[in-house]
Length: 76
Image (cartoon, rainbow, N blue to C red; front, side, top):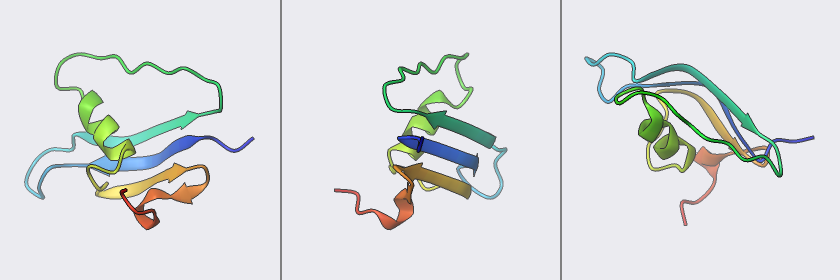
């Protein structure tokens, strides 16, 4: 079955001089699943959600929504 949302090998940093906030982040959520993201402060939870919702663009990797790369989908 095709995942509803999927993150593939996401890398992200806020600028080219900073450390990686996310490095090789992967996530796959199937239809009907409920997912929670937990972790300590500063571990990248909010950044991951911003990447999944196209508020931020990954430095590397892809976010797929129902099999389509979200970089090709209009924000609206």
